[in-house]
Image (cartoon, one colour):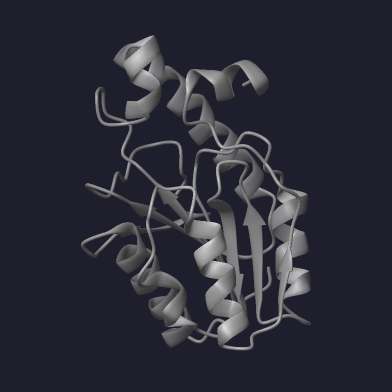
Length: 197
């Protein structure tokens, strides 16, 4: 266990009609929920293999009796008004606790592997930030070796501008960064057709 590494996993509580809403517009709420449950299983499986302190952050409530075993994953509630503020607060808490390298992932990316996450932690020995770019213009992973709060403000969250805006901040602030492989999140039926899950 690398106690200086914190892996943050942002998840939504798997509730009918509240997850994968864009996907649900074409395949229905029930099937969208089933897809999300499969994505959660995948995310748990790969996270379990990563040598790090692992923290699951829920959107609505902390579920003490779900797929995330409490002996492997600490459990927290996301706090903040938008995605940026929620991520900023989770990163700030991790660095305040003394972790030296912090990586966040979501639960939408079936192409993400434990090797990607391990690579991100390794790269943070040499770079200020590591980003996993998503095909849709966002990112599926963000890692930092020091807290950079600017990366979480003034972003068009859930748009195709997030990655570009984040890289612009890193360049403006003169942080070194590394881009991992581009992967595809599951947001639409088209994504489902391209990525088997």
